[in-house]
Figure 1 (spheres, rainbow, N blue to C red):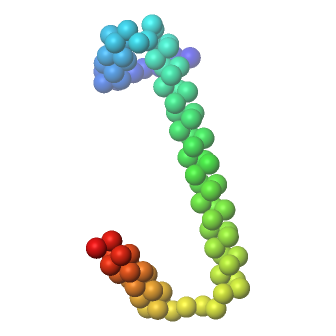
Figure 2: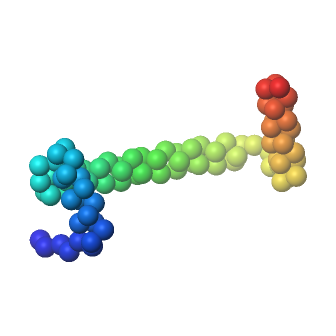
Figure 3: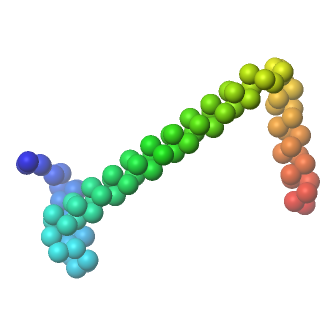
Length: 88
C-alpha cells in the first residue's frame, strides 16, 4: 500500500520522531491506527449504550400515561430550581 501525506501530516510525524519516543514512521502510524481503532470501538460502545437506554425509555413509555409538553418542561424547570436552592 502506498499513501500520500500532506505537509502538515509529515510535520506532525517528524515532530513525534524528534521526541525520541518513537523509533520510526511506521511506529508512529501504528500507534495512530491503534488509537483510531480504540476510538471507533469506544464510539460503537457508546452508541450501543444509548440505544439500550432509548429502548428502555420507549418500553417504559408504553406503560406510562402520556404527558403534555408544557407539564414536562415545568417539571424539569422545577427540578432545576430545587437543585439550585439546595446549592445556595
